[in-house]
Length: 102
Image 1 (cartoon, rainbow, N blue to C red):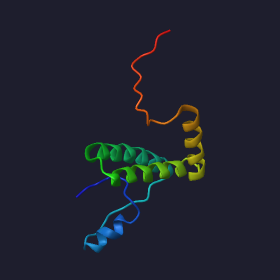
Image 2 (cartoon, helix red, strand yellow; image 1 turned 135 degrees about the horizontal axis):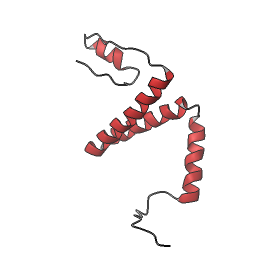
Image 3 (cartoon, helix red, strand yellow; image 1 turned 180 degrees about the vertical axis):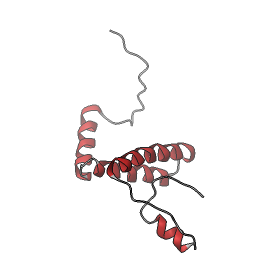
Image 4 (cartoon, one colour; image 1 turned 45 degrees about the vertical axis):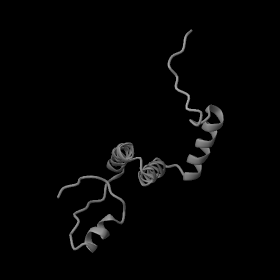
């Protein structure tokens, strides 16, 4: 069975524990970044289908990996998130912008 996708670090060991042999390769930086971006889309799609909390956790895991792959710390991500929230707010009020006029 072919997968050709980025998987979590412990997946190969889990496959081995089921008596199967995983075929893996370690990605270079550019491939890794592209695979993370693809994984983000995959996980967002899975969440959209299931609405499961575990899928949101997968999205966060990919976001954290992208952050670190881009040379940022999770603390920097948290700070950027808080600053943007303070400046523009969140989404709790469910505001949907239809249009604007000049």
